[in-house]
Length: 200
Image (cartoon, rainbow, N blue to C red):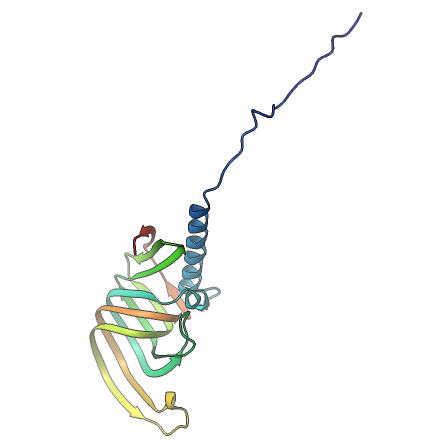
């Protein structure tokens, strides 16, 4: 008895499928993912401590909200850095405890030549923060202070010569251009994230 020879072909050369990657979409998605990760790590923090190093590398971002209520407020001028400048005048705001209503964080990022995306993080519920340190180049809004004190101090460092403090602060309809953000703890309930392509 003779056995018939059999041959099996799994895939012929013509049947092999190859995939292609759109480089622009790939880099846009990758950059957006890294930016969101940086925002999330910076805003939510790791082990109760949040640093905004990833955000400072991407330039400034915008923080806006309907209302902020805080206790233990201190402001003083300083020189800081961002992705465009090694040294730029800023104002440092420190608040021990605060609650933010209607929080919205936006960042615009150029991912390729001519391609821009806007990343938006919002919180539909009140945000609780302790140990806030925030550097801003501009702040617009309606402010109310409780027991405010402005003082000058003798120091060779001009950044320590002037301070403004208050037991309590309320900001309404505020918008801040921010380059650095730090919190000891933050509770961000009702968070939503959106990424959209925009034209510049």
